[in-house]
Length: 162
Image (tube, rainbow, N blue to C red):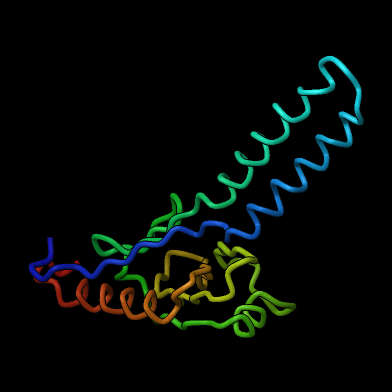
């Protein structure tokens, strides 16, 4: 273990409030279309099924967590030790579009959420891994880049010599 405290960062890539409102409105509209004023089961079943399904779907979309802890970048269940980080580039919306656009590398590891404008590009330095870089959505790309670079530097200067 390293002697110096490792920098940390945590963020959940949750949906903004307006997507929750829109998703519930669409589910309510679909339920009303199925109901169409009919009596009996068709009066309540569409609402009982579609509204909770919409909530579950939106919660699932916002489940991804991005963290830097204990000397590694954690994106959902993927883990990248900081010692394999060569560089971290904060990206705005235009930069993310360029990295993920027409000339995108098919071997890149990408976790992007379209409702989040910012991202970071983590360039790897691991000869055993064919993945050239990671692209990860984040609301605070500059902060994530700084913390990840600090974690990399802390790992490299660690007395354990990993």
